[in-house]
Length: 343
Ligand code: NCD
Image (cartoon, rainbow, N blue to C red; front, side, top):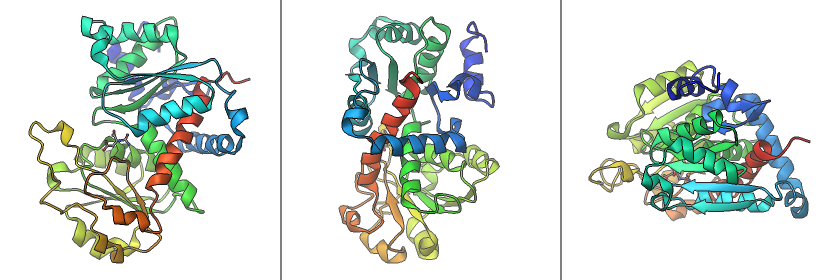
């Protein structure tokens, strides 16, 4: 695609079948905008890079991105994602800077996102961005692509649409915990999957594995959009849709390899309701443990509210703190892959 392409052409390309030509540069990711941009071979490379990086001693890791600067632009609340990107950059010897008050930047004076991209590219070697408007990250990528300084960009969560690095760390955590990998597994995604970007990004990533079944267990008011379900089926996932949690677990609990529990995304509600379905309907009650096998893996992207009571932390398959820890290493491996000069 020509550097003079319009934003519409750019968007159609990066979210379409030809996305790879722009999203990758010589086999390395350049703009991480969506989980579905990663093919199985890319995931295998990234996950291997995570293991290699993790096995190096601290001093060796700390030289990999020495003298590099990474901008973390966070236009939405974040604890784990911003802290793990900052920790990842520090580990690699880079300097992260977090900007979380976008009202204090020139955006408030009307600067375009595309111009801001070139400004950031003058001072930073990579940009990580979270924003409630999904077009924001696309426009940043577009501004980088068409300008003289083309720096790597990573979405750290865009609107309700995508959270690719959460999907990568979830995929890594699952793969790392199953000696025989993700192929053939059955995973239930529970909660507000209609709006939870982590839930749908994970489902997209799972299409890269063979023979995977995903059960979406969501109240009808927060169900996954039928067009998205159809696209997952087209990409090879077996999908079942359920509307109640207790009956689903009673019928299928012992057949499940993992549960991915999510919270109600009430920040998108004009009038927050506070609960998902009728009160308690989508809470993983402690007594549901008897409906699962002890080694059923329990994941949650965090933050949790009431849907995954703390007694689950004692369940043998509880992986939530491992997800958090892996998040730092997956993000470090991704930054290292994207930013470091391949010598
Ligand atoms: C998620 C997010 O921001 O989408 N948090 C995270 O990054 N781990 C999930 C959520 O907020 O529910």
